[in-house]
Image 1 (cartoon, one colour):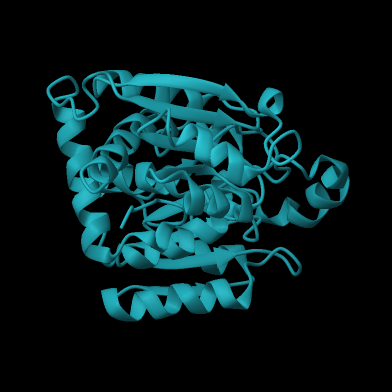
Image 2: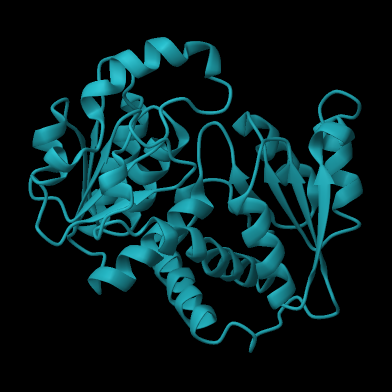
Length: 307
């Protein structure tokens, strides 16, 4: 059966650990492995704005010996000019793997059903699993472990990053705390799903309304932009509601002295995170950005070996 990476819990705890170990190896020896030699083509579809995703996948595919083929989703008109199912059947005969950065999760699920080759979620409205692999790799580099650490996600917990932190963090055995104002929490189903996973890994997943309480004693503090793609018309309302959840120097002081700060970027200094924090000594955001390449190389290699 063809394996896909559509959401964070598509990997079991053992599989996630295997992919992260592979990512670390690929980072140590970036030009030594060529599972996409031929070169095999990887189709990269972009429906949404992109910098890190396109740059890291393009560089990583090339380092693996493959050919990155960029498809402009707006020109292709996927779901409008042609159905997702028909596009999947076409690209599945042109490429060894399909990577898609899009909106509704249902679209990438349909792509995976009909492509006949592995499909990788490069971002949807519901999940950002490749980012989480990079984040977990970064934490392990700085902390030496994942198991038992506390990660506090502060801000808009109902976004794809909030969901992915719950699922991927629980899979890794982290204690994940999501702190959001009313109306911005992950769904109860998502929290329950993460808690079920955590029960098998020694981790935990919970919500905490008070950001100071969420960050207290945390090993990792995470935030994301408050106005994501598609929510620009809600900007004023969001900025007001989320203002108490900004990652400021004062908030960070409640975490452990050696806590690290993460942000998947782009960041808006003075809104969800203070400049003094993101540009300060506890920030690891540039390591995160680099590690997208290594983590994505690992998931592509892992999926190719199971295609």
